Length: 313
Image (tube, rainbow, N blue to C red; front, side, top):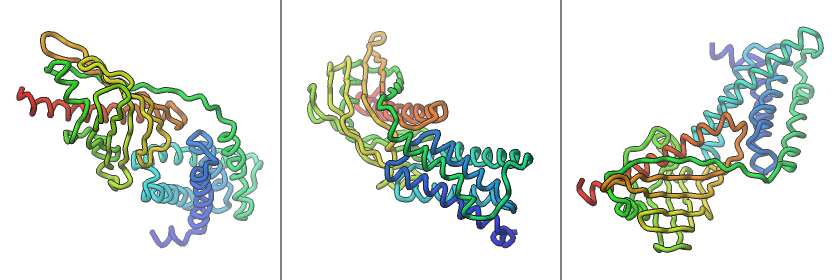
C-alpha cells in the first residue's frame, strides 16, 4: 500500500505543489509580506485545492497535500516560530479550505470551464491571486487595533492585604497546571516587582510547556506600574514582551483588583487586555481567551498554595 502511494504520480506532484504554495505563505510571513488573515488561512489553501483539482490524475493527490501541509507546519514549530496548539488550530482552517478548493474545481470541471492538465506551469497559476492579495492586504491594512479583555475572579479566604502581599511579587510559581499549560502555552515561573511604587517595573518570566522546548516556549513580559494601592488595586501597562512564537499577540495591560468579602476574605479580579492579528476572529478568539484565562487559573492556583503555606489556613 505504501509503495503504491509513493509511486503514485499525483501524490508526488501534489507534494511539490503544496511545498510551493504553503512554503510561499510561510516565506511571505517571515519577510513581512503577509498577515495571519483570511488571505493566508483561506485563500492560499483554496487556490492550492484548485491546483490539485485541476490535475489529470488525482489518485492520492489530496493525501499528499495534507501530509505535506502538516510536515511544513511542523517544520516551523521546530525552531520555535509557532506552538503546537496554534499549528493544530491552523490545520483546522487550512485542510478544509484545501478540500473546498478541490471540490469547487471538480464541480466547475463538469461544465468544461477548466481543462485538466498535469503541466506544472499551469498548475502553479492559481498561486497568483495569493501573490497579489497578501502583500496588498498587508500594506493597506488599518493600524486600528481591537482590544480583547479577559477577566477572571476568585474568592480567597484571606484579607485583601494578605492576597496583595502574596501576588505583587512571586519568587516561584509551581502549582497545578490547567490543560493548555500542560500542553504548549508558556508557563510563568516568577514575577518580580522591583519597587512597590508607581513607575516601578514588574517582570514575569516564562518557560515552555510540556510539548515545547523550554528555550523556544519561554520569554518575559515587562510591566510598568501605573496604579498601586496595597490591598485595593495593582494596575500595570505592558511595555515589553518576547514570548517566543507568539508574535501575533500584543499584550497591553495587566490589572489586579482586591475587593473585601465578608469578614476576612478577598475577591481577586485579574484582567488582561491584549490585541491579536489573527483572523478570522470568530475562530481564533475563543482559543486565545481560553489560553489567557488558563494562565490566570495557574497563577491563582499558585497563589492559593502560597497563602496556605504562609498563613497556615
